[in-house]
Length: 460
Ligand code: SF4
Image 1 (tube, rainbow, N blue to C red):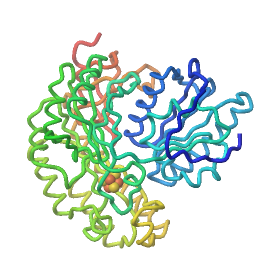
Image 2 (cartoon, rainbow, N blue to C red):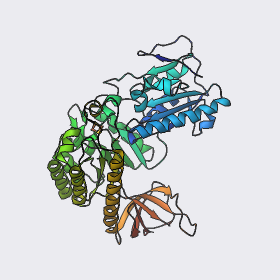
Image 3 (cartoon, rainbow, N blue to C red):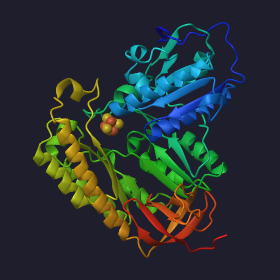
Image 4 (tube, rainbow, N blue to C red):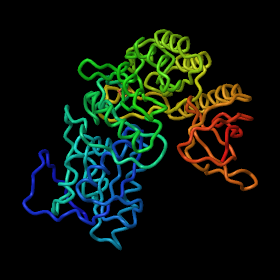
């Protein structure tokens, strides 16, 4: 189906629609945890409208790709994947193909040329209208990429896949406008979900059997709804019966208050693990990125956190080769990594995103080869630091929330089980354990990414 794209800036109800009954929907998710949570939201909205969610693309009548726009590479992958899925139409001519999420929002104008066979393009604030649009009989492809300052999907209970952790979106959008980042343009402005709704959602999650929740937001600690701030919310969520672990991601350094640090230190279920994006160790680069903090302010925050939470595991995001990054800027990033000693880091080469301030005003002037070399350097640096930090776990006993059988069996082929420690580290052990069980594991050896040991409590 090669269809022209019709922009529907307002949803137009149609008089006659085919009912959704029996139509099977397959959702594939790309990008961050916010997208995972959004896919659960979409599944819930569609299931409530009578659609059936399937795990098999080949069996689906409707295939939706929930996409990411943060890096160009991710967009290319989605275009490749949707072209491949278009091949299914040889056997399923009535298949509907849709692109949702940040990339849909970002590329709404160019997608018709790049993937003319796509039937539906929908941004992250439009999902409530998905059932109507999918039921709309039209020869034209449909586009709905309105940003809505009030949409926080309140009242929708996401359809979670089974597992040990439940994602709970508490704040949508972002007001920070870091110069390299597309998120504020594709996810709109910040809006928080009311605290009572979040607590009800977490109670529901606990009743479903989950022991762990992760509170989500692009700047999660910027949360404020009426007179409840993020510190209050951490305390409220931690009181929900049955919830043993509370995590959150990602906080914004500038918005990290002492009240939040106190809540992390005082409230048992809040895990001692924190992803605190730094992006660069150079003040000049941080200013160019408009991050709103200096290296020293970031350093002071880490000192406070570590003083309050001595067993804190700290992870971060780092970009190499951002506009104007000199060798000296880069060395400062390496120095900061050695000083802070993160447990792990997500490290990326800068990828220019159309529509951002950096794309419009700052030349992308670091050669690709230099970006690549710098990236390889910090990956190696971080690997060494992670390995040393993990080695300190040898001989300790850690509490592990079991996720299930490991994909990597032992060398002799025997099954192994894995889960996460409160610090968020993956631990693998050979003794039988059930998913969602809390077990004690004595750590015998480690790598830069994983702890290995033996279950030492009452193994079944
Ligand atoms: S805080 Fe900055 S990097 Fe994070 S989502 Fe907002 S604009 Fe992007």
